Length: 639
Ligand SMILES: NC(=O)C[C@H](N)C(=O)O
Image (cartoon, rainbow, N blue to C red; front, side):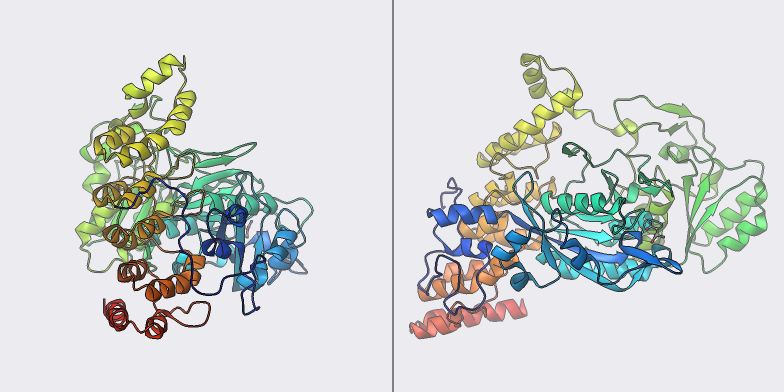
């Protein structure tokens, strides 16, 4: 097996084709190479490579502008969305556009005229971002599930070309869109961040600049595999949010969950709360939503006729907003009867609280005491209240601490599932699918404080508070997890996981346990890590992913599993694959050709002189390689 201890990871070997001059201009003298692309073609030991490695800290973000106040301007009839204004206006603002870098790297030639680049960030990243603007731009009050589906499909279409996504959106229905997208996006591995503003970005005093900049910085720098909402210095899980203020910059709240991140003097990601990947399935979008759903808010004296009319066909799913911890009048048999008839006929009714904070407990199902959760911190106490059983008898399902926005869009998503029985749909509604509901507090593990290892370290450093303990854990465990992976020690990884270690975090070189396992070809560990929080999209300080490591060390089975999970080469890697393939064909390296093809490289991609691998093999007269390439191509086409 190849030695994986060397982190230097130029993917390409020395080429037999013509190389670039020191300015990166290609021999044809046409489009100069972007520094990232140059890196792949240069020797790792040269000075040029050191410079280029810095440029390799580029990440790409797609900004989808759907409309909303953030991009509106004043008109005689009030604020209206202004088309084609963002790119030209942001180019004038130095914090949104590093003109020198853009010119030096020929940004527009490479990425098109809708692309800008931020100045280098504190952690030395360059965020290159491209606008995709909808026509017409919408006030979010006009949004429908078709618009959510369009956003979802655009994310899917562009998924492999970008590291993260920012969705510009009006605030009025932002929490609905964030919730809906969180369900539509299945096995999401990259950040999708929705933001907007209360005052247009073009006004002197506005909140759009901070919100857009914050969203770009998070989407471009952190692999947070969730649909999030960013507003007023806080990053929330999208399906936990609700709009709470129409006149404040602090317009959103996440009443039952702490923010995923805060961006104040420091950017602090609360990794403990970030969803951890737990799949070997590829990202996909399920854009179908069932429109026969509704929200019904109980109020004193609501008539049976109103409820009956609301529950009539074609209604298939209803979120009933009840009082307190899931209560409804228990002296209204007429009402309960109507509800029971509806659930008997197959309507799914979720019981969610009208309270901004708190939950309708699972315990309500059994008619035992139910919990009104006052705070999601598992270290804090919660209150216990009595809860009626009547609504359970009427067939309602407990909605835990879901917001009405999340419950409604979840119903719409679940009810649209084909080939799924009513019982399975009900089960999905009661399950936590995307972090939209908290587990019952009784089941929560207090793993950090139970950890013997952390306790020993904390004691020797005289540390007692939770924050300091967590800081130590986060500093040490990524390196320990890499070491445990190198040793093939799943038990040690289990212990680290129990401690709260997040396997997507990198060591001092940005290398994650998955990089190590992929380099070592340890398939069992790769699978374990993918199922336990590791992201396939992590990049080390050289810009390399676990997939590029597996290719470099020729670990075929690992490449297959990573590809199945959605790993892919970057656009630059794909662009340069032609040279690598030609070089492999010229040196009759069939193993190399196969692994590059498995990793997603296009066998028809030409190298620098315009010839693809096949022509190269023909040119050197190697019929065996020609036959092998024909076989490989057939496999790619027919599977
Ligand atoms: N602040 C905003 O964006 C409100 C606007 N009406 C919208 O939702 O599109």
